[in-house]
Image (cartoon, rainbow, N blue to C red; front, side, top):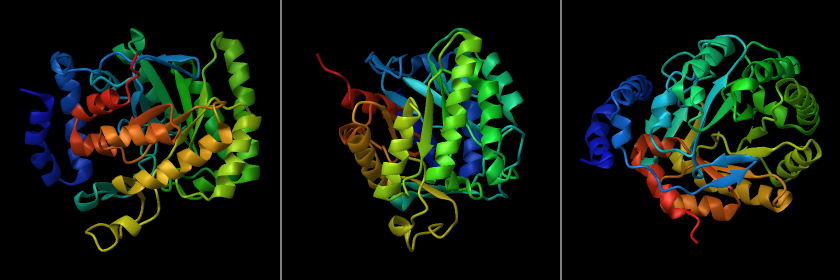
Length: 347
């Protein structure tokens, strides 16, 4: 019995529940299935190694941050066949996030709106979970750790939160993503402004160099940006990435646009919209970034990937690696293989 068939059976039950409740059932179920050895039965993508940012990725299809904010389910997710997994976003101190309900599916548009608000148990618990995972202990794969700021930290002190998290997660990460683009933390996207970004990246780069010396290991830094930016902002961001020698860019986060879900149930809810509605917005940013960055800084393309053709389109736009999240919710783990097959290097 294929994983695709099993997911097709489970999906109506999961989609009957509200989105966050389904999430809270699925991940512990995956953890238990992995402990029982059942994830070994899931067919995995053929090897398709890529070396990006000095890291060897077994295949170019990754899991985007947000599914496992606290690093509690690393081993189960690591058993699905991803070429890399990114967990978080984590903040220095634990915080509950925004009031529930805060996650809404829009099946007609293959979209999800969330306003979770970086709900997590804080960076110390996060690091303990990473350390406890067999995925980390046995160096089973590539692990990205995604960092943010606490909601009650004033925006002018945001850099302190990022530096604190970077210090804590650095020894355990394959790479670290700096999330300045969630729409669900007040004023966070302000950090994408030219002067704010310049200051933040300068401090992060200095810390990265110091930590590399301290730990005798260089851990790449990537920056996660929003899809809701114009060509001038893209140029400013690309310029800052190049000047500060940031190792990669994740494009993109969720969108505030509601054009694609207007009039649909939950389409009016506040938060970030992900899934199919962000696909073209994300591709536009990826293409524009590629034009500015060339081959100097790799792009991790994320947003609206639901099949192999979408994966190909994201790579053709200029991505070196891709990540999925909403597509995984709608399609299940078969999506990983389909995407990997579609973008596989062929001799």
